[in-house]
Length: 72
Image (cartoon, rainbow, N blue to C red):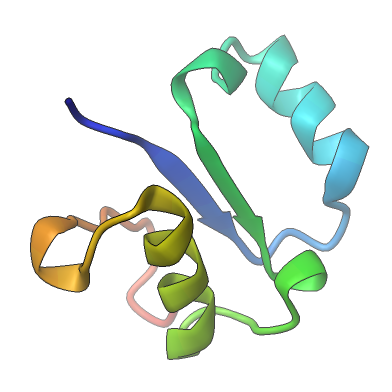
């Protein structure tokens, strides 16, 4: 039972983000989508990660984060 999600600082979130995830074939694999403009915190602020962990129903010790930027 792995659950995958996306935490993004993307400016245009909401339906444009979900549309792009569907177009790329990723939407069905992502149970949690946390967009900073919707959550109110930018990565690397801990609050956006806590929000995603809460939605996933797990703690930080039970999660893994894979990123593409050292600064974020």
